[in-house]
Length: 242
Ligand code: NAD
Image 1: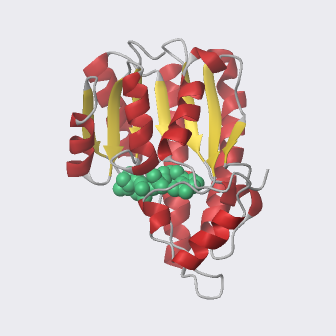
Image 2: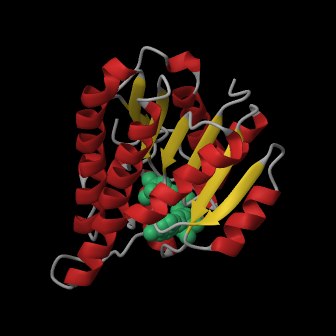
Image 3: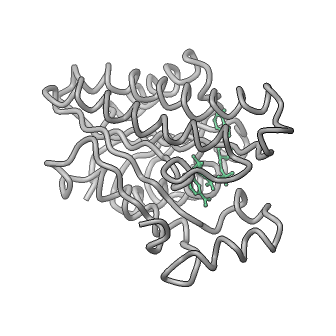
C-alpha cells in the first residue's frame, strides 16, 4: 500500500512509533526514524525489511525536525508521510505538578507536533501532496486525573491538526489524528498495577490494545484508502470513552 513512498516517524525507536514504522515498511515504504535515543533509532531502522535510517531528533527543536525531513528527501527522494508520534508523560495532580513538568509535556507533544506538521506540509505542498498523522490520546478527549499537562497537549493536537488540515487541504496535504486508548507499551507498563486495572475495567472490549492495532489505523491514514479524509480523529480504544 505504500510501495515507493517515504515515511518519517518521530519517537519510533520503540512502542507505537516502532510498530507504525514496521507496518509501513511491511507495506513497502522507505522509513526515516527520528528519536531522542539515536542508538535505539538506528537499531530499530536496521530491523526493518525496507531501506530505513534512524537518526537523533528532538522534536522540540525546529532545526532537528527540519534536518530529519531533509534526510528523508536526500536519502529517498521524497516525503510522502509524516507521523508525529514522539511523546512523554510527566503525571502529577495539579497541586503537585511543577511548571517544568507542565512545560516539558506541552513542548514535546504540542510544539513537537507543530514543528513536524508545518515543516512536513511545507515540503509536501511543493511536491503534490502527502499525509500527516498526529498522535493524540483519549486523555485529550475526556481528561485524566494527574494529566492536566498531557490532556491539554493531546486536546491541542486535535485543534492544531484540524486548523492545519484546513490550511493545506487544497494542496493535496491531508492531516489526520489517531487517538489511542490503553495500549501496551513502555509508557503504560510503567503505571502502577492498580491504575492499569482501573483503566482496563473501562474498556468495553475488555483488553488493552497492541501497538500494531494503532499502526494499522495509521496505515489507513497514510494510504490512498483514506484519500478523501482530512481533519478527522480516529479513536483506537476498544470502545473506551466512545
Ligand atoms: P513510548 O514511551 O514507548 O515511546 C515514545 C518514544 O518517543 C521513545 O522512543 C522516546 O525516546 C521518544 N521521545 C520522547 N521525547 C522525544 C523528543 N523530544 N523527541 C524525539 N523523540 C522523543 O511511548 P508510546 O506508548 O509508544 O507512545 C507513542 C505516542 O502515542 C505518544 O505520543 C503517546 O502520547 C501516544 N499515546 C500512547 C498511548 C499508550 O497507551 N501507550 C495512549 C495514547 C496515546
